[in-house]
Image (cartoon, rainbow, N blue to C red; front, side):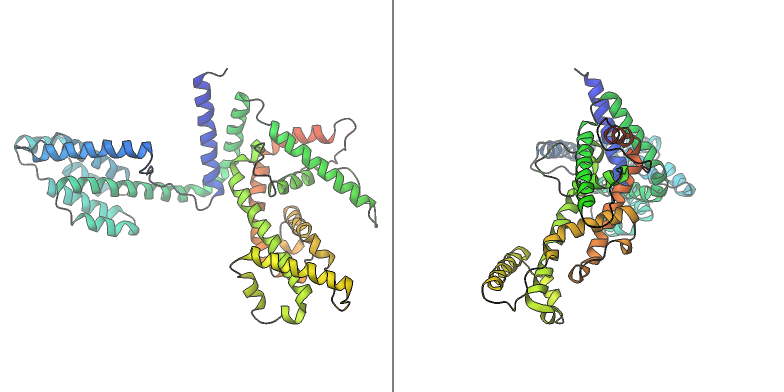
Length: 425
């Protein structure tokens, strides 16, 4: 029932939010020239239009006398592009551009048959050489080897496009600290605009937090029934949130009901989830190898490195698991000297998850639970994954905290449900 203008406004809002988030979160983000695939409809249409344009210019310049109408317009566009690359301190260069690429003067030269395209092109190339980044020096030098005016103008526009992209990325890097300061308020305001247009845009987020509350309740009840001091008590909103975020690392790819507030980071979280699965698998292999092969073999110089660098981890894992199963049977039947698999092998995933939870709670990895010796071999990878994961979680909580608070308040304080403590910051 929404009007087309409302839908376009909503799409524009989502697009701006995604772009702003990508600039802030992705430190390697940069703009790239738009090059549609050659086999796509857009690519084919672009190629046809460009070919027709340059063929028309070639025909005009080859006529007798030459027709410079399109060439003059292109020179004016070249001047505009060069001016966009100038910094405030380029006073002299700006003056030279106005003097050499004076459109009125060029029109007079055309009228008197005195236009020298190669002279103007030489000035343009020299100006580009003084403005371009060092990475573009080879491409600018290659322009001097082109003699055909059409090919030269085409190449100049291509290189100028690359230089403009370089300038945009340089400006982006320079403004990044300022953007970081404004990003939270900007993303929060943009998401509020989306909510104003689509009030149901938090339905999946609510279901996601509800599932985390249920898991936290179950974990709390299991902990209270275990031996030791009773640690059961009111649920913490921050504990529920941390559990919810960790659930995203094992999200079913087929489940499309991804929480709206984390949707922008889904690709990053999916990649971290896949990396986490591989680390758990690798940790299981190390634990099993340590158990079945013994500490002497496991501590041999280069053994662990070769094991971790196996070209096919899955085959290695299947073989080791089969070996472990066989050895376990032998242990039960007739080989009492073989040790059985340790309980920690079956708890690898839980230990790694506990590591991530501790990272979200306390930050430094040194405050995380003690890991078994084989898992310490993966400590660098776990810290790297935990740092990347924590960065995403912290930024998301900062931006969407005001949206999570009423949902958690309702879930944790609903009649008959678990009550949350005051520590929900």
